[in-house]
Image (cartoon, rainbow, N blue to C red; front, side, top):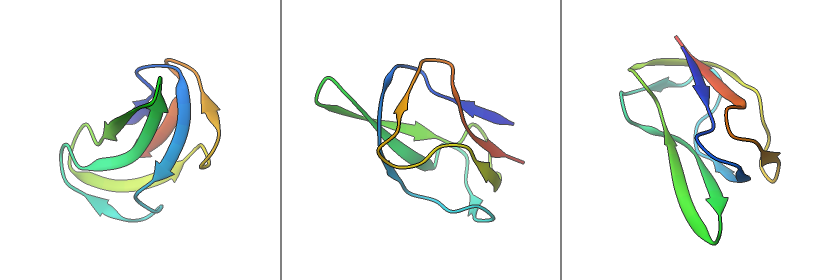
Amino acid sequence: MQVKAELTGNLWKIVVEEGQPVGADETLMILESMKMEIPVNAPQAGRVTKIHVREGQTVQEGQLLAEVD
């Protein structure tokens, strides 16, 4: 399942690594927008198969961030 950015902002921190198992609603990464920290959560339990971004990168709304299978 694809995990996409809900808003435009800076990717402040990536909390997980590729290959890591995650639970539903577990935080994968944290976006920073307008001085607020917004968690990006796993849509389902599974394993992080691919991270498509890096810390410090500016992401756009709808941009693919990661994949969880």
